[in-house]
Amino acid sequence: QVTLVESGGGLVQAGGSLRLSCAASGSRSSINSMDWYRQAPGKQRELVATVTNGGGTDYADSVKGRFTISRDNAKNTVYLQMNMLSPEDTAIYYCKCTRYYGDVYWGRGTQVTVSS
Image 1: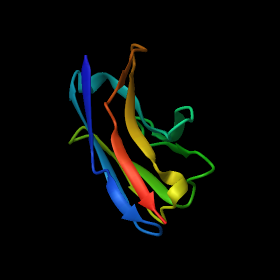
Image 2: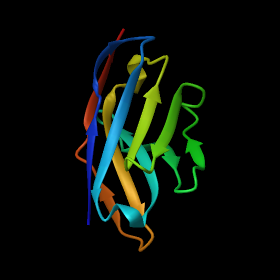
Image 3: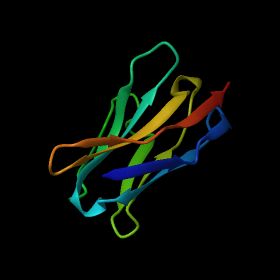
C-alpha cells in the first residue's frame, strides 16, 4: 500500500508560478513511475507529466516548456514546478504512482486556481 499526499496548490495570477509536492508513504521502495494529472470542471482527467524511477520524464504538449516534474527518491517526493500559469491551467491536480507490481495509487488532489 502507498499513500500519496499532495500540497502546494492555491490561487495565483496569470503568469505566476506554483510548485506542487506529492509525498509518498507506505511501500515506497516498489514505486516505479509517478505522475501528475489534472481535472478541470466539466473535463476529463488528463495526464500532465510523468517521471520514471530512472528519472525519465514526459509532458503533455500543453505544458511543455512551462512545467517541470522532478523526483527526490530519498524524500519519496515528486514535484511539479509550474511557471507561466494561465487560467486554462485551473484544475484539481492529482498525484499518481504505479508500483512494479502494477497496482496504482492516487492522492486526493490539490486545487490550483489561476486568475486572469
